[in-house]
Length: 293
Ligand code: HEM
Image (cartoon, rainbow, N blue to C red; front, side):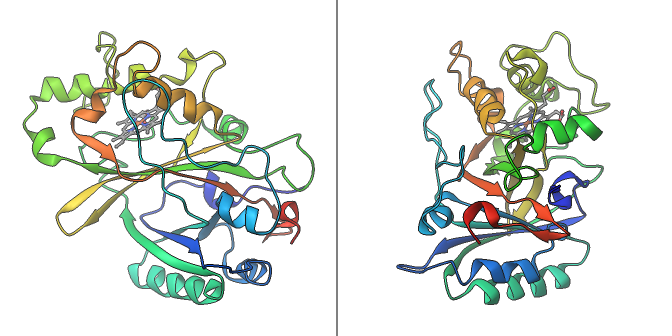
């Protein structure tokens, strides 16, 4: 029986690093991808494959597709193509650098390293706006049920689909809001994380309340704050057994259902958007049999 990559279900680490790779022109990842198995353990390094890598092998993974730019409503969101995504999880920046180099060298024959995002846990698991993030994440079996594929056959069970968006915060705009407006934008009180029952319909937690969808739309969020120089925000990461729940939430955030846009957009916006399929593990190793490797 295949397992999930353990880093998906584990708590968010102190430090993280995200590596995004594109396929080299004409490259054949068949020889290269299996080498990842020796350097990526699914725990300290979680691996996701984008559609370009899967298609280059002449394969498909049902449900894996490019990130849509339009979810309905008035906003068009960025979609950024990426062939390979690695989420490095750790405690030490030096270790993360060495692991990044090891991975980049291992896949260099077929993949270009296009981007590196350094991420971290802030305070007690807060977004850089100061709000607790992850409170309503499903726990235990519910987390597995939300995030991990089951009943699809040996090569797919244990895998996961992940949506990744780099959000850049406009701290000036956020700081200009009164603390009541900030709380109403999130739908929770920053001071004690209490949900505001009378929050406006535009508040982020009203938009995304997972139980309010039909069917219910649970995802396992493993986002981390990021910073570079004076810029920063949230690298939003949501694992699901498909992209359906994420898409239902984003649809509401952009106002596709009722014309009401998530108040988050007042002070932050995504600059990337990518989808990946995270292969399962068999006997503690990444299992790439679904893509014929
Ligand atoms: C910069 C971007 C974002 C920030 C700062 C942010 C922040 C937050 C915060 C502070 C909460 C409340 C505590 C919690 O339950 O975690 C929350 C809840 C949530 N967010 Fe976000 N979020 C962002 C983007 C997104 C996106 C893009 C989605 C999905 C498309 C999303 C989905 C959710 C969900 C499902 C919940 C829990 C709702 C519930 O069931 O109560 N978030 N977010």
